[in-house]
Length: 490
Image 1 (spheres, helix red, strand yellow):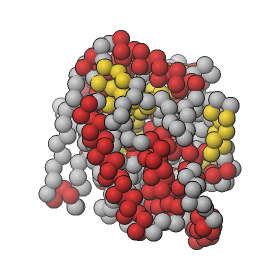
Image 2 (tube, rainbow, N blue to C red):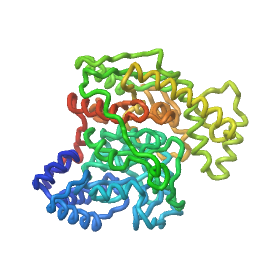
Image 3 (cartoon, rainbow, N blue to C red):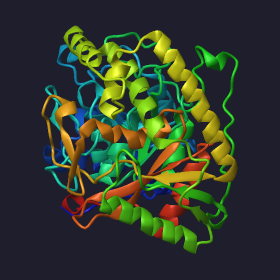
Image 4 (cartoon, rainbow, N blue to C red):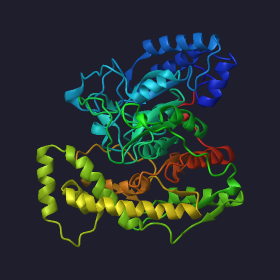
């Protein structure tokens, strides 16, 4: 079948085509559905299809367009991570006991997408409990990377990144606490934005069968994914803003504009090394090339700064705080095993694995002291962003790796330039922005020598989300962005 001219267009381009009546919402929706039906037996990105309701919504969008209505997402096909509540569809988070759970109402973010005219095609696959960088579970099976079906698409928003790379609509909604927006975007060569903590309300992005009530989950955020940087603010602006049931009673959203509008005006700190977890030659090479390109535009690029927080201590703190949150939900047997392991740790053991064990078994008192250390880190970042506008660094240490579904993640290994490292230690790179709640935009930078996507994250100042978003857009415009996977460029 010949490739549709619309399959890999940006949401901004599609919206303009809809307004100009060059294409209808039904045609765009049917085009995405056709691609899913043609290709998804190989990718397995869309785990829950909602095509009938999508076509109904598309027909309503066409009628609204005919009446002259204009909404940010009107008529645009969108996919949504399985972990979001959508009325009438299963929300399982990959947990087999919840395979029949169907919420009665939409998540707040989903309601906002629908109100903005978005056409939801269905839900995208996730790992069990959203707790892996590989997206597989017993209910829906394994999602494959469109650039190499034998490799992970990333996780936990891996179904969303694979869907975007394969051309299943221009936008998707994901979530992130351990890199779950940025990592899959990196592995599939697309864009994603981890918003500032609490910028987007998470009501209804809820583990089943718990009620969808306003609730803060430490460090966890929801956010947009897309094939083009220009599309990220489009979806972010729709879902951002306080929940009317709690903070919205007294607060309104008023994000500042980007600090600059041209590449030559940006002051950027570029980091490509970590004392505990190096990035491999492919990633360092991509960063080196980007640093040179930015310098060539007149941007001020620094490779080190005494203002940059202690990366080692920040990574250890993140491991403890992340696992003190996630560990609360471990089954009793796992928790008992973690306690036994933590009891055997030497006080001198400062490995990231040891810090994860300490986090799982952390007392509230220990957490309070860690929270104080985090506040100190936030103050350091504020000082840094008086001198720099953004920090550019890796998202992960290697391009997408082959599927590895061995059950104990602590025993998995990731090979970085010939040396094995503990699989969960990869948390160190996405954790740099997550720990202190900073906004971070994932940007693709082309392909490695093996044809796998590589990229970086752009970290910006707290609540200045439009600064990394604008820098990502300028980099895309100047140096190129998403490259369609050859298998699915038809």
